[in-house]
Image (cartoon, rainbow, N blue to C red; front, top):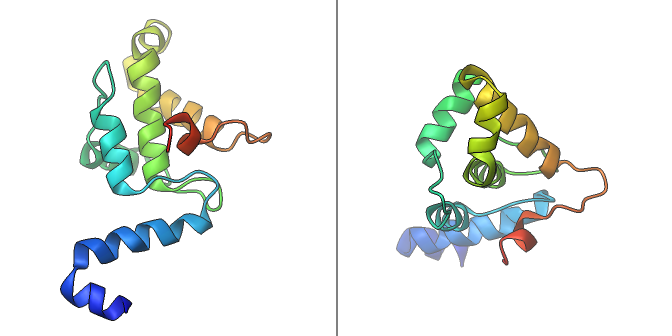
Length: 125
């Protein structure tokens, strides 16, 4: 059946693969879910997925941490932190260190030992 989906409906096949992959992660989002969440942020999120990935590569950060979070969960969490607290963080953190600080705070949320933060619950998914 999956071979048929891949051959005839590749977008739908990718959606199913994204959903099936969720069993690997404590915190996960599909690319479609992450893009929808980030697009709806007010104030506007600072990074597109491509910009975020380029900055992650530039800083040498891992995109995922199995079994803690996938790349889409990290992308959305970092944008959430900047949308909600970017102005406050900028008061105390130099611009050169802001991306690193937001990354570290997002990782803290997504790897919280008592597992209180759940990105799917937070965004009502």
